[in-house]
Image (cartoon, rainbow over all chains, first blue to last red):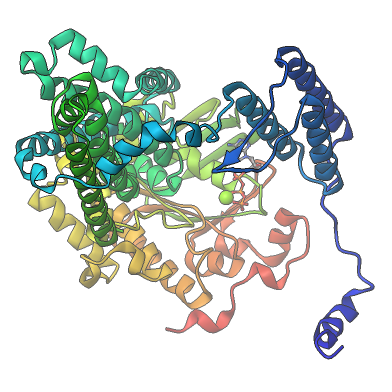
Amino acid sequence: MVTTSTAERRAAPQAATVRPEPPRPSGLVYLGLAGLAVLAFIVFWVIQESGDVLLIPLGFVTLWAPLNPVIGLVVMLVALAVCFKARIGTMAAFGALAFIMMSYWAGATVGFTLLEIPERWSNVEPRLMAFLDPNWSYIWTVRDQWLITISMAVVATLVGCAIGLVLAMYASPVSSPNKGTSQTIKAVNSVIRSIPDVGWALLFVAFIGGTAHGLGPMAGILALLMFNIGIVAKLTSETIDAVNPGPVEAADASGATLTQRNRLAILPQVLPGFVSYGLYVFELNIRASAALGIVGVGGIGSAMMLQLNRFQFENVAAILIALIVVVLLVDMFSMYIRRKLL
Amino acid sequence: MITFENIDVVYPNGFKGLSNVNLQINKGEFVAIVGLSGAGKSTLIRTVNGLVPFTSGTLTVGDVVVDPRSKAKLRRLRSRVGMIFQSFNLVTRVSVLNNVLVGRSADTPTWRSLLGWYRAEDKELAFQSLERVGIVDKAYMRAASLSGGQQQRVAIARVLAQDPEVILADEPVASLDPPTAHKVMRDLRRIQQELGITTIVNMHHLDLARSYADRVIGMRAGEVVFDGPVEEATDEVIEQVYQRSLTAEDIVTAEATQE
Ligand SMILES: Nc1ncnc2c1ncn2[C@@H]1O[C@H](COP(=O)(O)OP(=O)(O)OP(=O)(O)O)[C@@H](O)[C@H]1O
Ligand SMILES: [Mg+2]
């Protein structure tokens, strides 16, 4: 009782006063959500194939495996009931419902499982052994490819950030000349972003030629460039949306042009964010250029692809380890810069 | 001289911010606008530089007829009309000097602003403005590192760098403690007298209005309900404007009046 005495003393004077409770969410909307859950259940019931189960395994531990859509329905309804009881807003409840539905659907459709690995062990083992014994001397022989990769990443980052910044200024309603411009640029941006980096690489290799024509790095830079523009423009324009409007209004009130006020009142506010997006994108580029080698854009990726095709797993392992080291170094470097800047 | 003739402001949502305002503010006058929250003080002040476009009537500032639809004309007008805000509105991450130089925008080519490469005479003007508010030694400090009163002085220097004919101030001292509020008001008053700049200030505090202004304008529900010299703005008159009796909140503590 000694431990609770202070709590009791504090609670005592408040016992009489009634504290306001969170507002009760609309029951009608909750009914609608329940209807949505039932609808989803019907859809799942229709599309379910016999014996299909939802598996979300982590390693060999199955976290949650409802055996058929009825369990999913029960989970959804229980979640809704809990949300209603806890007076959680309808938007949040909808979010929870959507999360359950998505994970149910995704799990049921993909049938993702790690359970197959042990069955294929005999196949995996020798390759794994080669990976565990990397050929260290090989790292040095591909230094030219590393240089190409890094210069591709640098050029793509610099140019991509510059273009991304300009696009972001036109995309955010805060800094763009008018609503029409901002919506158009946003749409263009979505298109750029919807094509993955490998997609861009394939496109540019097809248009201007890949490693075979000695143009691999060119295609790689262009692919990374598009990839970077998409990311930087998106993140920066969202940062611009959230700037303090005060200085912007002050610049307007002093008769600055749109360009001047974007430069003087918005750019300084978004600069730290913008620089860290640039560093992040640089890191992504180093990693992406390893993957892009597969489609023939030059750099360390193509060296890795070559060794993989020759079943030289010791060399592949050496490259992968070097990649980890380089990415870690880049990460440390960008962390250092960010600390200096913020 | 600023003239309002039958000015109406209707906000996009249909709310009537100003109705039928007629005013004539003379060159070099120091005018305080008082009124309860929501009376339309900010609306009135923002109409002058077009931050809030008026919807009918005629507004002239100096010899210019204000046209809220022409962006280029508005920019030219704004270059001659400086504005000071309650929350200072500085770019806190950059230096005091760069904040003051924002006031030179209208006279600076865009490419110079983009590069941040200002002419020597613009910098000199910025330094002179900082000198006038007594913080020239802080020129290369980050604006964020200054106190509230100092930040508001930077904002005043930014306006002075515009070499304005009119200064609009929307509750310039409402976020400051009483002694600092008096200091900033004294700065504004001194600048108005030294340079003959027409100054319009929104106020919450009656005693500030009475000690620093030449003329008081009272507003209620978007209308001007009192307009006269400070001497006529007695407690009874202001109670008429507010439609309630005065309280302690209507005045800043008097203790601050001495330096
Ligand atoms: N952008 C807007 N859209 C619609 N209504 C607005 C807008 N801005 C202000 N109003 C309304 O116009 C009225 C007057 O607002 P204004 O900001 O001019 O008042 P104020 O006298 O400055 O008040 P305060 O002392 O609180 O600053 C208020 O009722 C407000 O709700
Ligand atoms: Mg106001």
